[in-house]
Picture 1 (spheres, each protein chain N blue to C red):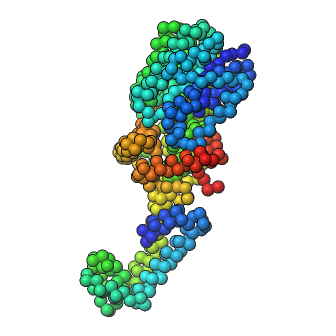
Picture 2: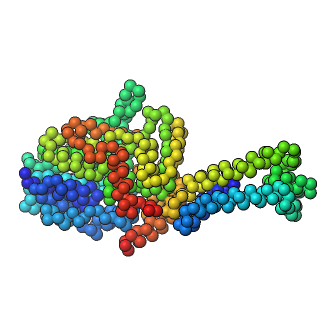
Picture 3: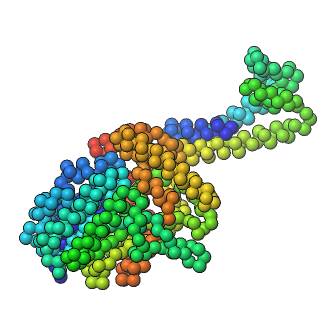
Length: 148
Length: 376
């Protein structure tokens, strides 16, 4: 969710803000709701993730397959922690789902600092931006101003 | 009393403001304005052609009936002759200088140091030194980062005009040498001089130096809310509004007590953290508080300075200029805290005495005239 927030903040600044400033809210709602819905569907085994078993390093068991996948999502990257579902873990799962809000906010906030927020801003990326790009920008602006 | 006044560098930022100030407040002063011919100016002032295509100083003031414009080049003594032929000046405001942190020391010396030598030479030969007053524009940069006296709580006390030279960059070195040349002529020929040392200038039409700070904050979208601890290490932000600078110059020019003296022209001391918070507020960008211990800040600012150095090197390779000249980045690392008590004691009252009035007037102008981007 952190990276979704980060990328969304970039998309918003670059493409969406000039169309509608409320896109920042739409993006957040769409992303968080989307993840909540998909994660819940996997958890309750409505979406079956055992299709990932075709990968040689993935072995999702058939019992509690949704819960197993959700607790051990890093299995896709080859990291299987082998956490099995125990009674009462639903509460932890609930809080983890709620924490998506925080991670999204954190990512979008840092993204905003890094990419900027308004259409003309570049964020702190400016500090590491290649000099060549500055020169090009400057030439473009100067040409435009001289025409005016 | 009517006066004949010479202003060199009259097409520059301070020069145009000085002409306007005199036209506004001194009804019987006649101005001879001079600057480089346009083509030569474009060639020398690369910061003007590279950093901004706008470059619209208030050159219309030079078309006023009380102003006569004669182009001249300080580096070519013969071009100065028409300025002094059959003219006896009461006041000469020497604002002309190459103010460019990116320029090499050779070119700075040629224009700033040799330029003043050529000017003083022709003044000595053609003018009445008994009546003439020469107001010279220097910079607070000639002090560099002085060794500050401390108060009883170990806070630094603003440095006054007696602080020894310690210029940190090529531009300031050339200004120090310029002052030395002037002092040499002053002693030799008893020329009545007043030296003013302004802090970094801000104000409408200003597009080099502090303008870059506003542009960076505006473009980055976040005001750097760095709070240095312990508080006695907080860095100050030296500034002066261009209007106050030219007011101070005309004030000193008419004051007998100012002859032979040096004056810092700077607003009351302010801290960088307060300044940036206010800038962020005016530009309507986010501001976050980031407390930091002084040694960590030193390390962080040195890293950024090193990055700026790399960018400058790269830009030189590409035959262009970096986004921010290296010496400007030096403000992150050093304490530049200077006193304006001397000019205040003489009776001068600042129109923009603090960082708030100075900054607000400038940023409002930038936004209104589209020099700083905004979505409104």
